Image: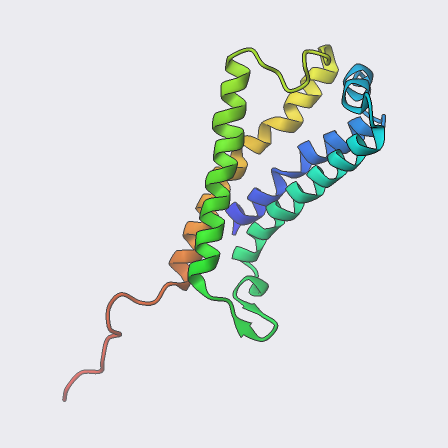
Length: 163
């Protein structure tokens, strides 16, 4: 249960930081905001809000692995295999995006902020994005727990004794 809720909660800080940055409420990010909205500002605002909403929504789907709506939806039992397959692929995708690709880019000296944020605002940005590294592993852990809880017994149930 903690892994599923954790998978959702680690998506919140970076989504919140991104929205606060694009609307101008994150001090020290003026240059980055200008860099992001150069050209078509409406598109940049829409993209940032949509990205944040998608991130939060997909993160919240992990909660379905521990809540009743993840097992029974609209009066029907949710099939195990598609849920486990989707959650596993989602968890692996998030591991690839954040734990492998993003960390690899950072190690290669490529920063997603184009080196436009520094000092305390950079520390705040890093603190808000660091939890996202746990999203994939927590998603995979919650998926394994869901599968273990919902799978069919692999052996026949014990029968009463013969008298």
